[in-house]
Image (cartoon, rainbow, N blue to C red; front, side, top):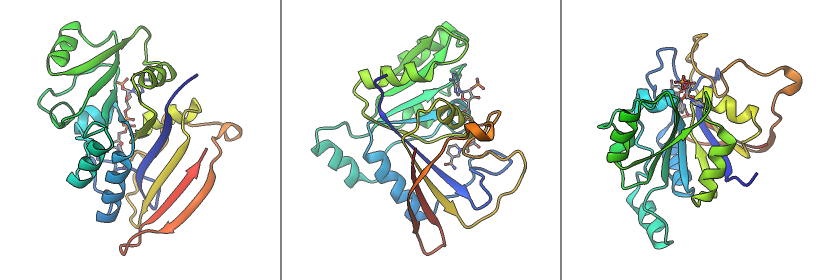
Length: 226
Ligand SMILES: NC(=O)c1ccc[n+]([C@@H]2O[C@H](COP(=O)([O-])OP(=O)(O)OC[C@H]3O[C@@H](n4cnc5c(N)ncnc54)[C@H](OP(=O)(O)O)[C@@H]3O)[C@@H](O)[C@H]2O)c1
């Protein structure tokens, strides 16, 4: 399969949570980490999020720093990477930041459970919609399509259900984790790999590349390859 190089980045608390149990997109990153993520985004062709993150938070996913955006333009790239959502029912808020913030190409991979009139609304708002024939979006096929559209480096930003699928299917090449010096707790708070979990003998194995004391707050940056 020809697919983009896939980087996963998450911000996680010291107890392994990527949000609090309230699931309202709690702040985890430090200012330095936000800057690092901005640079990561500026270095990829597309940024992807899962359906719950997309519908609940409608993230901007654009590059914040105007100097980084200018540098992309000077390299002959679009100002922002493509923004991609994977969602079984694409009930997106057309006024939300995912659709509105740009300029950026916006793509949504969904299933036939999205009503045709909603697909028309999304397309009118400039979103390219790809409808998968099956119950779920076929993630390897989605990656092939993205590769065909010119995506060579893809940043996957979560959440935990989508990431678990990427890990299970062996679709992750690199993982960076910003480990924040806080504890969120909560048995139902999301982690970087939710879903049903892996049998220990099938647990994806990581190779540690680096561990860095990252910022004055006490954050740590972990970098792995798979
Ligand atoms: N700290 C961080 O770095 C970070 C980053 C991003 C998100 N988050 C947090 O993560 C939480 C959300 O994570 P989550 O696990 O609830 O959800 P998620 O991973 O964002 O989205 C999962 C949903 O995406 C859809 N989806 C995933 N794979 C699909 C496929 N192959 N085909 C069709 N649809 C697919 C499904 O929607 P359906 O259920 O409709 O089928 C699924 O429930 C939020 O609390 C958010 O704040 C944290």
